[in-house]
Length: 171
Image 1 (cartoon, rainbow, N blue to C red):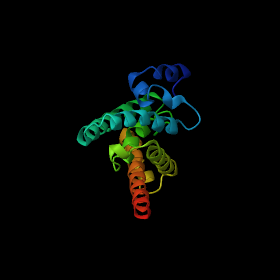
Image 2: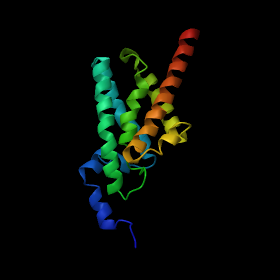
Image 3: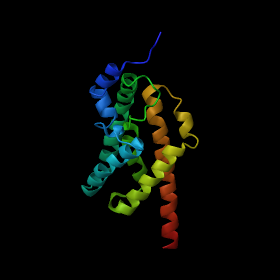
Image 4: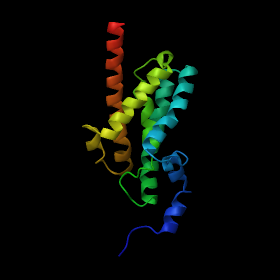
């Protein structure tokens, strides 16, 4: 028995609200490297929140809420898109994890160069998936989709802090 969804079913899935959200309004359909596009989509929002000088706890609450909502959204969207463990078109995980890299930097220091470095470090760790990133992918459904990106963000944040400390000690 063939369990692969039909072309019509897959086509209809793209209009489902969870798929629209999980693909960040279809950014996940951009090629090449949809995860890179998803990560980049977060940068203008991060910059706007930094510029607005939103209190840290509110910014943290916003992104933690996005991450918590993203787990069931990604679960349903991956089912709608054929049941793959982590479809490449789902980029909400990259979008929601990217801000956590920059939480180690005060908002007034989130200049374009710092944000670019944070973005590149996050993409490096998300693509290469060093431990424990790859292991977190084994968590069930949307949690696995999200958790490897949280780990990549943590590794990128630690690396960004180390680079910042080195620059300050030699600057």
